[in-house]
Each structure stands twice: as C-alpha cells, then as structure tokens.
Length: 66
Image (cartoon, rainbow, N blue to C red; front, side, top):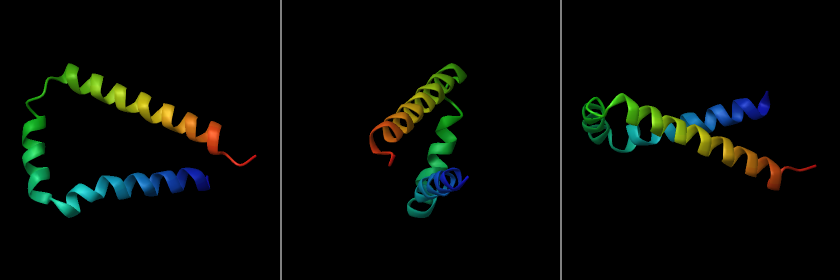
C-alpha cells in the first residue's frame, strides 16, 4: 500500500507541474485537444499505459531490493 500511495503522490506532482508553471498554455492545449480524433487519443493513451507498465516492470526487475 505504501508503494501505491508513493506512486499516486508522485503522479499528482507530475500532473500538477504544468498547471503551476504555465496555466495559460494548459488552457490553450485543452482547447486544441478537443479537436484531436478519439482514435488518436485512444492510441496515445494505450501507448502511454504500455510505456508505464514497461517502466514499472524494468524498475522492479532491475532496482528492487531483494
């Protein structure tokens, strides 16, 4: 559970950086993303999820303290 909470907190930090550092650019991006086709967004989402799983797998395989 501790690992999950740490990962959740880290994700929230990374998600908050753009809103803190460039809120006006985030608004512009939000307007543009509505014009992107759903199929492209689904492919991008799938690719990001797979990349995340690979990073977690590699991190746990190579850097886990056993």
